[in-house]
Length: 327
Ligand code: XMP
Image (cartoon, protein in one colour):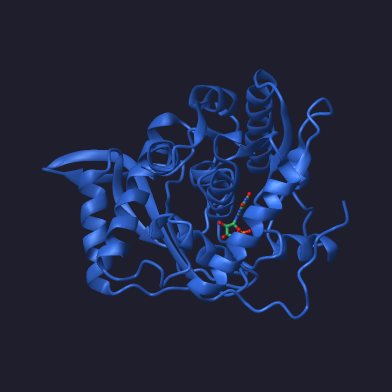
């Protein structure tokens, strides 16, 4: 098949009308490409794969088989939201795999950041491939490739995550219905497809998930402290009108403890670091300065509500010299 490219004169999709026209066109194209065959999709719950899922459900219904792999490093409520939106509301043919133990067992004791990323990426493919092999008659693999992915891979900046690195015995024809869209267009299309705003306009989240926010060897208790503190931070950002205004915000729980005091008793617990940043291109980022009252409130909530935390710190470092994530 010839490579589909974004026409130079394509109008940016910014309105419901333009999004609907795009959706109608893609539904026809998907139906023509797929016919009565089955399509497989790794549904992470991120913007791009979610919009692809919604488009394919509209076009081919239960000929789409979506697999949601929970690697145990997702944010609080994420797997539940994927199940609620896709299985319960959109009636998707959704396979949910809770692979938490597999991932955390493999990661136990692993301290090197690159090795952690490698294990998470490789095991993700293993789990997905195992599910794919259980299915009959799949001929297509859908992917949430978007136009910047193509441009970046052509410019040699990053390899296009083509076909997700699946093993030799699992080679499918690709279905990439949002490949000519920019991210903002994907969001508008997603909204028109009925996806919740919280899913379509959410902040970026790395593939290795909370694993890179639990520096060093991941333990279940420290990972839980990351997840709970992240949930509090997101709740407070939403309440204070910062959701959608700040590019990315999250918490990190490093692997060291310090002395504290609670109810007159000594504690020896982890700190929780808050990071909130703004950027346009993620190459350079600036720090978002939060109102002092919000910082105080976050420190108070996180130290009282999150097990194992006795201090809250704020990361004032731009990129460069720091990166956004800690690993
Ligand atoms: P860094 O830490 O490199 O992050 O400054 C830049 C942006 O990329 C996100 N990020 C990732 N996204 N897979 C992803 O899909 C990854 O492995 C990954 N690592 C970092 C990070 O959250 C930030 O938005």
